[in-house]
Structure formats: structure tokens, C-alpha cells
Length: 314
Image 1 (tube, rainbow, N blue to C red):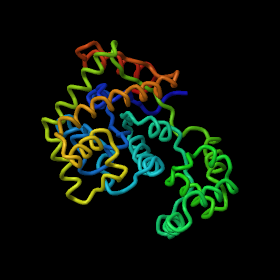
Image 2: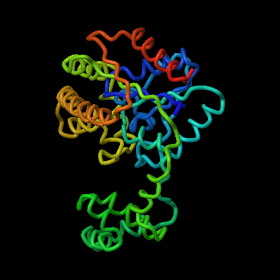
Image 3: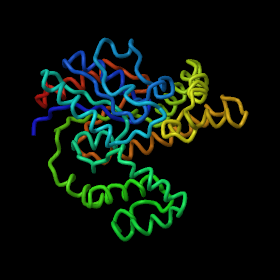
Image 4: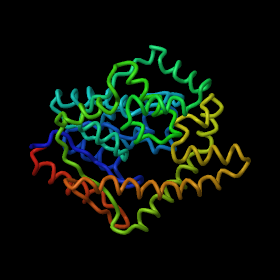
């Protein structure tokens, strides 16, 4: 099928932001971020959120759509991003979805419908209270009776996902396993052309990651983390588990120099990049572009533009 959206993916620090903006200018597109941490307001430096200069006048969507105190989810991302992508298509422009969060990308392409969730129902609060009074194992046993497949997938200590599965079952009468099965049986909402970025040699990517972390520290990452903590964002919040924030926050809490935390950020970023590459390599339809040690944006743009036009995107 002819593609209708362009995806730019790859590991952290692989140049997705720059290429997406360049292609948007060349192909009359708008950029939709698929980064699970760039959704949070006030988290700019550590997430490498594009600056106004880096956006180059191109509309960028799905940035700063959540408070860092919130537990953002893939379900909420899809619910917010789908109308944006549809709107870009309706305006006759090209949606360019750029990011490194594979789970967000896959579920957006599918347009996956998630099990309904009514946050004002009070059900989640009642389940949380039961965890405090009865203990998580009691609710695990309840989930095993109602949805043994979900119980088998969810780690026994994963309170969040255990409560979510019970919540869906109690609210809808249908297990989260059945909701997921029904959703996956539907055809994908979009047909993507996927361009995946990497470096020709692994050490080149590691150097790029190290330089990025050094740049973040020079920009004031420690101050950004301190500001978030001072504003009441807990270290236990989902947002503060992001690489770059968790390590610096820990160094601050333990009275260690932030520079020590930065070295940990480099290590965790390399480990994350490996996981991202494993995820994206599962997609056998992706077209890979490998940078040289010094990235050539023009060469990547020519490769991507010719590929897009050859596939009928523009």
C-alpha cells in the first residue's frame, strides 16, 4: 500500500530531530514527536527537546502536553496524537513522526484503541486503598482468577499494571487481554514509510551520546533537575525515571557531584540505545541510513527525500 506518513526513528542522539525538520521543509510536512519524555513540560534540556531554532519554523506537535507530576501513558499518547496526524493529512501536508520510543510509534501506526479508562470514577483510588489494606498479593490473586493471561504477563511486583488490568475488568466486564486482542485484530490506521537512523560504527554513536550529555550539563541540566524537584515533582514520578533526570536527581539527593551523575547518564544512554536498536531492527520494512562519524545532514535528506518521493509520498 502507498504510505501516508513518514517515520524517522533510531536510537538516542542519532539525529532524528534535525532530519525531521529538514524533511518537513523539503516535503511540506509537520513533525509529530514520538518521545515518551518530551511530552512533559519543563523537561527540556534532559530530553533534548527541539529548540525554536532547531524547529526551523516547522510546526512540531506532541511536545509539552503533560505535567511532569502525571503518569503519562501510551494510551494517552495515541489518543492525543491520532487527531493531530489526521489533521495534518486533512490539510494536505505530510505527517513526519519522529522519535525513539518504539512503543509509541508502533501503537500510533496501529491507531490502537485501548481499554476505556474513566479517571474520575474513583475505582483506581479504591484499588490503591485495597493494596494498602490487603496487600498487592491479594489483588494479584484476584487478577489471576479474572485474567490469568494478564497475570502471567505482569510481574508480581508491578502494582501499576496489576491495578490497571483489574480496573479494566471491573469497569468494563471484559479483561484487558480481550481488549488488546480485539484491538490488534483491526487493520493499522496508517501505512508508514520508516527511515531508521544509526551510525556506521558503534563507537561513533557512543561519542555522540557522550558529547550530548556534556552539552546538556553545560546547558544547565543540574539546574533543571533541581527546579523540578523544588516545584514538587517527586523522584518517584514517571517523568523523573527518565534517563538524565533519575541519575542527576540521585546524585543531588546523595550529596554527590552532579558530574558523577552525568557519567551514569552516559552509561544508561548507551544501554538504552542498544535496546532501541534491537526494537527498530525488528521492522524489516524500515530503510536504514547510517551516518559517517561526522553526520552529513544533506546526504541523509537527499536519501530520505528520494525514497519518500519514490514511494509516492510527495
